[in-house]
Image 1 (cartoon, rainbow over the protein chains, first blue to last red):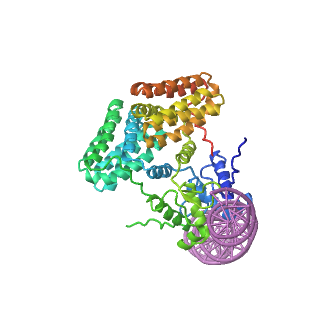
Image 2 (image 1 turned 90 degrees about the vertical axis):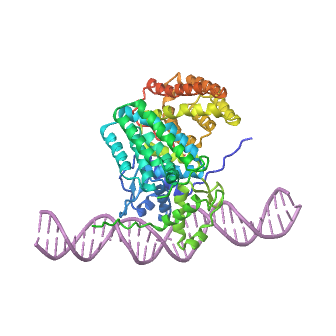
Image 3 (image 1 turned 45 degrees about the vertical axis):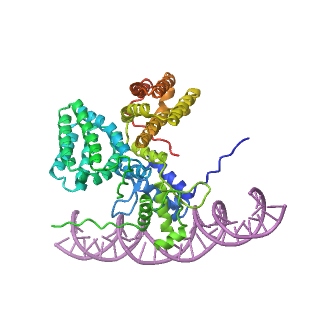
Length: 246
Length: 246
DNA sequence: GATAGTATTATTGTCGGACAAAAAGACAGG
DNA sequence: CCTGTCTTTTTGTCCGACAATAATACTATC
C-alpha cells in the first residue's frame, strides 16, 4: 500500500517570508540593504500589503530585518548574538532545564575557553578582559550589576579565545546563569569576593599565556557557583528562572 | 546636564506579541492550550484583527505558538529544539563562522558528553545509541543519509548524557557540521568506514561504562573530521555553508 | 554656495469591512 | 457507534482609508 503525505499548504505570508529569507541567507540581499517599501513588495509578489506585513513580522521576529529606531525603511540585518541567545534561553527555560544542567555545561566549556584565551589572546581582547575585571572590582554592590559583571567577564574571555561559535554557544548559558545568579548572589555572602579573586587569577594567567593555570582557575571559578547555590539553599535540581525579556 | 533617551515607540503589534509571550513564559498559558480566535483577541486587546495577526506572526516565528497541520486554532507550544537550533545555525552561518570554529567547538564539547554518557547512560538511551549505530552501519550510501546518521549518533549520545542543555547547545553545531560534511564526505573516501568504527568503539565504551575510553574515542572521532576536511581539500578557514532551511 | 527652515511626498501603523475556503461542531440516519 | 450532511466559526486574503511621521524637495537667508 502506498501512503501519501498530507499536502503541505503554505499560507502566502509564509511563502513571502521564506522567499525574502532565502535571498538574505544566500547573500543576494546583504546586510545593511534596505527592503523596498511594503507597497512595492506587495506589487512584486502580487499579494496584498497585509500579507506582506505579516511576512515582515516573521522576518523581524527572526531578526533578519530590523528597523533602526526613528527610521522608516526595513533594513537587512544579521541576527545579533544577544537576540538569538535570548530565544535559546527562553526555550531552555520553557523546557524546565535545571540549574544543575546549566552549571554542568558551563563547567564543561568554560575551562577550555579560558585555556584557548591564554594560548592566543590578542592585545585588544586582553584589554577587554582587564576592563571587565576592573569594572567588576570597582562596583559590584547591586546584585544586578554584579551579575552582569560576571557575564561580561565570561564574554570577554570567550572573545579572547577567538572562536565565535563558542562565544555564541555560551551566550544562552550566560543568560540562564544570570537569571539564577540574581537570586543566589545576595544569599551567599562570600560569593562576590570569591568571584573577584577568581577573575583576577584567570586574567593574570591569560596575560601570562599560562594555559594550565587559566584552565584550572576557570574550573574553580565555575565550581564556585555550585557552592554558592548550595550555601544559599537553592536546589540545583530546580528549574532555572526564565531570563528577562527585553 | 541630564540627557534623555529617545522615547521608545512600540507599535501595537509588538505590544500585543509581548503581552501574549509574557503569559506563555510565566506559564499562565500552558503548552497545548489553544489561543482564542483572532476576533476575540482583537476585542480583548481592543485593536484591529490585522494588528493581532501581525502579533501572531511574531509569536509563530518565535515558535511560541503553532498551528498543528490541518487544524485551525493556534496552540501554545514550547519551541522545539530543532527550530531553535535552525535559527542559531542560520545566525552562525551569516556571521561567516569557519569550519575550524565549528570543529574546534565540537572537539571541545563532545568528548565530555561521551564521558557523561558512559558514566550514567540508562537502558533506553543506550538502546537509542545502539540503533543509531546500527542504522549508520546498515546504510550510509548516500551522502545525505550518511551525514544524517552521524548527527543522529551525536544526538543519541547527548541524550544519554542526561543533560538537555548540552543536547540543545550541540544541535546548532550539528546542523553546521551536517552542512559541511555533505560537501566533504564524498571527497574523503576513508571517512565512512572510519566513522562506523568510531561509533562502534564509542558505543562499546558507553555500554561498558568505560568513561575514559568513551572520551578518548569520541576525541578521535571528532578529530577525524578535521582530517577529512584536509584530505578532501576543504579549507578549514572557509566559512561554513548555511544549513538548509526546512 | 552652503545652511537652516519649510513645504511636499512617501511610507508606515492602524483601522474598518468584506468574502471564499476550510475546520469545527451539530445533527440525522444507518 | 460510525457515517455522511448541514451550519457555524475561524482563518487567509483582499480592498480601501487615514493619521502620523520619516524622507525628500524646495526656499529663503546669510
